[in-house]
Image (tube, rainbow, N blue to C red; front, top):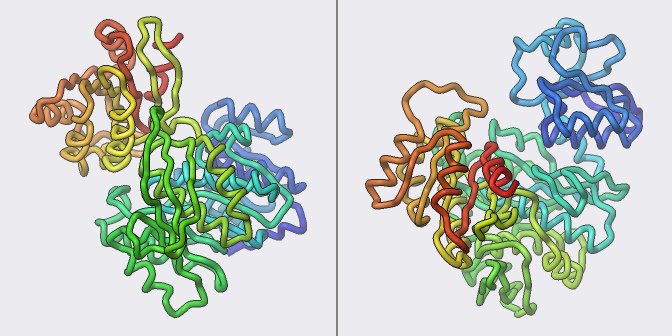
Length: 462
């Protein structure tokens, strides 16, 4: 594999530079003195920002974008060998790295690198780490999978040894990472278009654990089923094991968890059985109280004081689209947006919503990928039925093609079997009009999904 010499700036070209992670990596290289170019299939706010920063961005991916002065190419998992730029780079024998391979190499430049993995909660927990590191004035480099107001984007380039990033399990890309601190929040059934089953997923997380650097720390949810399998994978290594959760046998425990009127959690922190006082969060839900324990453990392991940790957590507001208040409509309905797209995530979000909703709870749900919808159809219906009314959009295809075996109409049928008021509306315009014509003062609408369903709320508020 080609090794990037970060001490000798060269010319890097990013195929798919408009993506959240790719744009951030490109920005890091630019600030390190590299010449950076890239391409994307369509123009966006992200590509415009990159161009304003001095990065050459091509709209459209054609062979002529690959020039003689390019030293290496970075590409995303969505780029295949039939892509013109990919094929041209191969033809010219230009070294090529996947996004994960490049990020793994980049991490070696930082003494205190932290990777946040887990089926759910990565972005919010990475946000917590970002706030803590900034509160402690560590001048960190941050790479996060969403827009974080703290850093006015998804990337921050620092000049210290502190680095934090999300670690996504899809296609096992996080196996390329080499972290001083590795966090595993949870293991759940997802991405079944790649993984065979839950055992295959658990094995993948166990392998990720083995990528932790010697002398480093592995932080694992001690309450989950697969904790022992993950811990056993590194038991013969010089790696410090830390567990967190609600169970008293964990190193970091949250007790007496309470949610305020906004759904934000407060709890008593115990470390190795010792009461360490109250922790206040500005993010919602009991699940985030548990996740915050991992951020506390990680921060302590890299030398940050508990006082800075607590203050960072108190100030932390998650990235956009995580139970994000968008506004109130003219008729007094509250609009919330949330990225939840897996049954476990939806259940957690709706538990919070139920605790704060003043009147009827509505969900406008856009299923994400056919594979996930088909695999979890009954579970989607079960967790969504907590809402009073469910409005269904068409499935967001993402990387997949419709094979005709599942649709949002099937989800409507499952919800109705459970006695839930559900209606398949398909089009966003239909959803907007239906809610506008049927909602009342103090109703709450959550636009939910990993696609572009958030635009429904924007339209209602405009």
